[in-house]
Structure formats: C-alpha cells, structure tokens
Image (cartoon, rainbow, N blue to C red):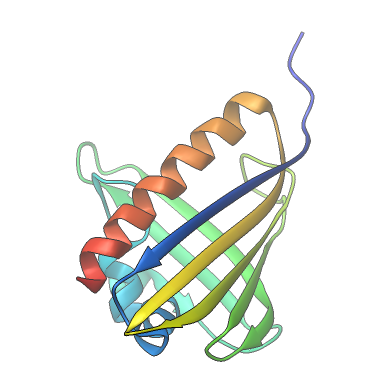
Amino acid sequence: MAEAATAQEITITRVFDAPRELVWKAWTEPEQLAQWWGARGWTNPVERITMDVRPGGAFSVTSVSDEDGSEMTVRGAYGEVVEPERLVLEEPAEGSWHEGAVSVATFTDLGDGRTEMMVRTTIHTTDEMRQMAEEGMATSFDRLAAHLA
C-alpha cells in the first residue's frame, strides 16, 4: 500500500557572509537564481526561468540534468513579496510530485554584512519524498552560499 501524503514541514536556516540586499537579489533576479537553484548536477538555463516578483506573479524554473538531460520544473506564484525581507512562494499540486507546497523565505540583516536566511516549507507529500526534498534544498543552499561568496 502506498504511503499517504501528509502536511510536512522543512525548515532550513543559513547565515551568509553577504548583505541582505545581495541575498534578496540572488532570490529575485533570474540571472542570479540560475547560478544556484537546485541540487548539484543540475543547470538552470536563464531563458527557462520566469520571475514576476510581485504578489500573484508567476514563478517557474526548469532545471536540466547535466547527466542525462532530463528536466524538472518548479511552478508557482508569489503569495507575498516584502523587499528585502520576505518572499512567499506557493506551488500548486498540478503536475507535481507533491500535493502542494508553500515556502516562506525570510532574510534578516545581522549587521557586519551578514544575512540570516530561513526557509520554512510546508509540503503535502510522503515522508520519503520530504526527505529527498530537504536534501535537495540543503544542497541548493550550499550552492547559494558559494554563489554569494
């Protein structure tokens, strides 16, 4: 019997040696997002990224596997945009491996050019898929740290 999807939460906090405005731009400019989004071994062609950074605006990233060329697309809409403090991304269940997700990213200026980023995602999925998503997010944020360095 297949495992039932349930509401699960993933929370990841990172501190970057970068000003909050730079972290914000990494999340809101397609040219920057292309450099770090997704797990290692995946490329994000900038022409396959849509970012209408306003409440209700569309968000879409199509990542391409460096190994076999397979594609994975994340689609959603911005639920909230408070520059440079908070982004809310809402992903519908349609055509996805989960039954809907909401991610809230907050950016806190720690002073001395450092920023704390906390991403809290509520995702409706199985335990196994949540674990895979969490590992993918952690790898992506490692790539973000390298991009900001």
